[in-house]
Amino acid sequence: MDSRIVIIGSGIAGISAAHKLIKSGFHHVRILEATGRSGGRVKTGRFGDKVVEIGANWIHGPCEENPVFRLARQYGLLDPEALIPENQEIEIGGIPPWVPNIFLSSGQRLTLEELDPAREMFDKLLTESSEFATKGGEPTASVGDFIRSGVQKQAVEEWKDVDAKTRSLRLCAISHLLKQQCCVNGTHSMDEVGLGAFGLYKCLPGLDCTFPRGYEGLITNLLAELPPDLVTYNRPVSCVHWNDAERTEKPVMVECDDGEKIAADHVIVTVPLGYLKKHHSALFCPPLPLHKLHSVQRLGFGTNNKIFVEFDSPWWDEDCGAIFLVWDDEDEVVDQVSDIERSWVKKLFGFTVLKPTERYGHALCGWIAGHESEYMETLSEQEVTHCITQVVRRFTGNPTITPKRILCSQWFHDPWTCGSYSFPGKLCSAQDLENMMEPLPTKGSPAQPLQVLFAGEATHPFYYSTVHGAVLSGWREAERLISHYSVQQSVPKSNL
Ligand code: 6YU
Image 1: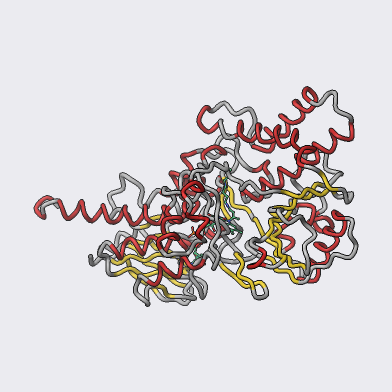
Image 2 (image 1 turned 45 degrees about the vertical axis):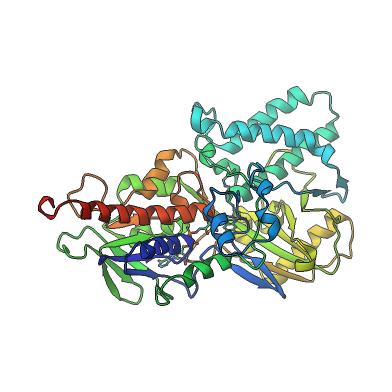
């Protein structure tokens, strides 16, 4: 196939699109990548002598339907436990079933049973939140508002016989759970997540699993099957010129930062939504149609950062999978910190334990979302270490615990990502995700079709925010071009 296709971005969506196109006989495919590496938000790093994930962590829902699971299995990238058929049937509903150790900011340990009533109430409200996407009639604009008003009402009714201290503790636990959801959804606050669209996201079955030698193995294996000069690195694209009536041959012209201009029949844009929100006006000439632009603005894109911390010895139980931190002064059901500079660390909901210990030693991964985590990115390693040390000592009541090493991700200040992943913002609907993936020019235009196509996690109608959503979006846009040309070929020349 002679068509020239330029793909902007060498993340998993761009690579997946290129893979499918090349395997289907398209020879002139080229990826332009702003940075010096492929993978984008699939980014494996080193923490001392350990391999850790700076970006995507798990295969969410590793089952037959999940293309990331199928590819990882095909390339031999998973531990044998991850391949057990029973694991592929477990429904976890978004968060792995960790055995938690729960600590209170006063230095007390809490039992699971003590927090069960709070978790039950929270889980029920979260499930109800996801039902409005199909039934409509949402009573509030955001998931945060819905949960807060539900908790206020139900706490009065259901916990009326509970003493004030226990009630306050349960409300503090709900603040912790909201902060946890901020990380899951990649948002500053659940008050920014639209209630009407929250349920659009679909969970696949399967017990979330990791890549023992790093998620980037997936990228390396896919690229190994493609021409070695496919990706041009350090080549940021500054403008996509489309719909130029004078350019009948190759209707799109991609302009790079260094001034190079590349003519193409089709361009697949896979830049992150965070980048698109910030740079859409410079990136497209003519600009994006208004309905598409409004969807770019309505969809949310927030920050979820990780803080890896290593210790000489564990201060958590042997079977512990996650450490949850509950602040005892947060019974107002809050997921935002009022004085970010002084108290940003209160947004940290806890840590997951890196397992197995033989592979990772005594290392934790802290999770922190929102503007608090964006502020953290501006601090020095010493400043972050100091705050984390204070928190650990305070919650455990042990003044001697000292981290050995620390490493933070910095997704907000990454100029080519500008955050972590997408979520449906207030007033969002399924139409916004449809608009995100709609090619340009839009239907009905007399101009040459499929000049600019859109892939990337934020263009998937129900697996947005995930690696498998990004893979499927890349395949979808490749298929769009493949079927466009196969239809053209099947039409006799006289009819064209
Ligand atoms: C998953 C997980 N995971 C943690 C963290 C992060 C993410 N995700 P890319 O950005 O990869 O590629 C674009 C490229 O474009 C890039 O290389 C740029 O440099 C380049 N570019 C930009 N501008 C350019 C220009 N002008 N010119 C040229 N090039 C340019 N997903 O499945 N499991 O555990 C996590 C996690 C900290 C940051 C994640 C996870 C998200 C994925 O990483 C992400 O979707 C894909 O990698 C995106 O690929 P891409 O190709 O689209 O873009 C209930 C419910 C609620 C709903 N949410 C639940 C799901 C929760 C999501 N889970 C996240 C959790 C973690 C921990």
